[in-house]
Length: 113
Length: 114
Image 1: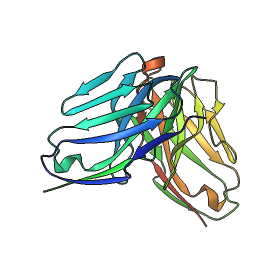
Image 2 (image 1 turned 45 degrees about the vertical axis):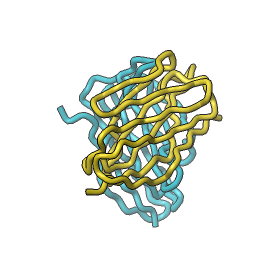
Image 3 (image 1 turned 90 degrees about the vertical axis):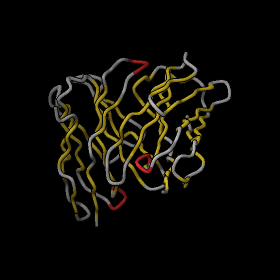
Image 4 (image 1 turned 135 degrees about the vertical axis):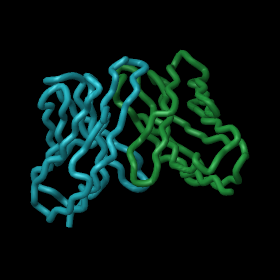
């Protein structure tokens, strides 16, 4: 059974700092790895999707990498802003069940002024 | 374009009562999903529908039933609510691109079972 872990559970950084969020998964037979953002009391918003054949994806100040052999993905946020404060979740999609996601418990990020 | 909508936003039930959570999407997506989110446990898949007319169990289906009414709508029913079903329920739809499907989430329904 796939298990997805995100460490740390919470992170506080000053505005402008570059930061990395970590995601690890136990089963490397994945179709893709996705990163989502969740604001308090809201639903999830997809940020980036990395297919299993890819190493990284970029969108604006966000860069996500994938290393299947080590079972790890990272989300890099450049020049953090207070508006980046949210919970970030990663989810693994499994080979053979392409649409079924296994989620981590998330990292709650606070960017302070 | 409303995306994924869910009703109700909040609900309080007594143990044993039944209710149906409604979900609709206007993006012409084939696949739809129901998740529950509990503190410290992340989101867990309850049921999903890969296309109109099909439904399948996810990780935690016990105590729930679903109906894919048409391509737009996917409802989740609690026949006899239990306190363990207190949670936030999210509906999502997917663009069904197989290995690169992006899922779009609704705002959630917060359910309290007393």
